[in-house]
Length: 340
Image (cartoon, rainbow, N blue to C red; front, top):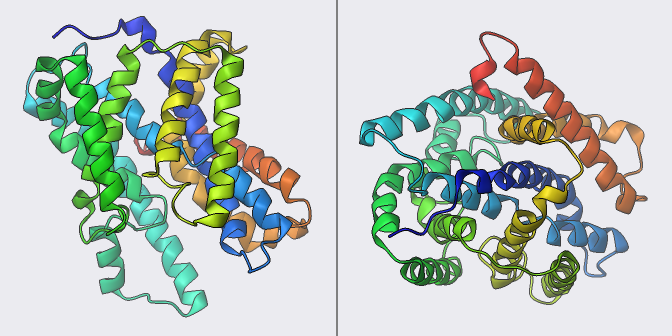
């Protein structure tokens, strides 16, 4: 079936990739203040709640970007082994290197806090795909890659409506399944990916679908959703903000359309945006280490909670810039350029 977009139409995914990396940094900076809620729900909790509600879409968007690129019939592969080889070349060294780095960091942290440091503990964390709190995504995505060649055949032979129905069915199954199990905490890391298949297909569908609303209407709709998510998390915690809630699924998809329709208005050159996108994976991998150092020194004495509405965006800028600088530096070193 012919239902694919032209190659030049996919540049907006570069912008989306970088924005998703920043969103995840916002989440990891805001989460501790959200988790410290008390029965009275202080102002700092509501501020953290707002930032989380506005940025929890990072992982779903990363999955949809992969689906838009890898499921496209435009992208051709010589064979099954050719596809797997390309994916392996791209992700093996980043996963291997940063797993080692974060296992060392986790060992130091656990030892100082009197938490488990046995070899069995770290082996299980790798098997589960959780050598550190953000690494699960890279372990999960292997499952998507493993089945992508076969999903591509489904995409190629299906109509757009059939793919839409399949995506919706997979989303609904994920929503129901997460009431009974944690999608991010399975016994084996390859068991995480089925939850994200709906997003994976949705990414491809969004890339080939035209859906136009004016930018103000998009922003209004997304702002209303942020309010619903934030208030919903106060009334029914865990049902509005996370990856497989109706609200976050809707938010993520509408945001994709917003950027797709308006990326030409972004006042930065294509070259700069492409360069930033190329370091998005590096920023994603590095930022928890940067954040750990900042927290180790108690935010260098800055009263984060007192000025949380300003301190979160300020820290996001600092962590992002430092992470990008480290990623850029590593990209210039012969032995390390493959790890970012």
